[in-house]
Length: 142
Image 1 (cartoon, rainbow, N blue to C red):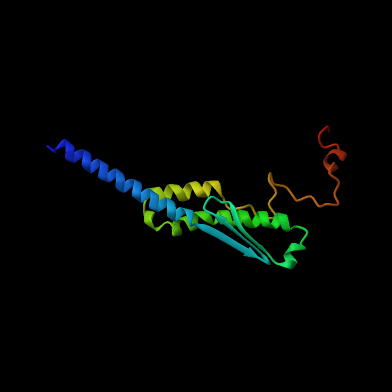
Image 2: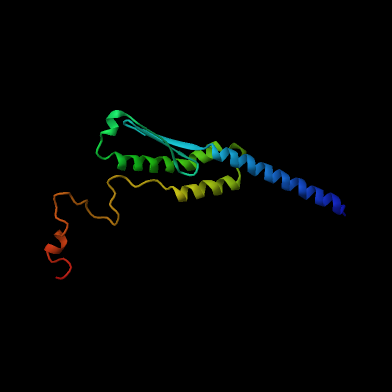
């Protein structure tokens, strides 16, 4: 039978190792970023998905749809975080812990929908079509 004092010492040492490993992993995760650039707009997000860097060329600043493009690029950068997390946390490589972190990051930041995507299906309505076209044909109350 093992000495109780030795057992407690072993448990304390294992716990200290676990805490130390978690701190190393946390520090590595804090350095993970993802960056996307496109036609004069460059965005970078940190490990939490927050925008940390935005670069715009002068010509990009004049673009009428700049805000929407920035939001799309941020979503694309966020969607790269799971792979960046897998590569940027070497202390957890091959562990179930890293698999859980990557899965949770993927759930938080899924791949963005393509620009042509219309939620619920159906064709995209052009700007020259009236909003009430469905109702003008008696669609709801036929």
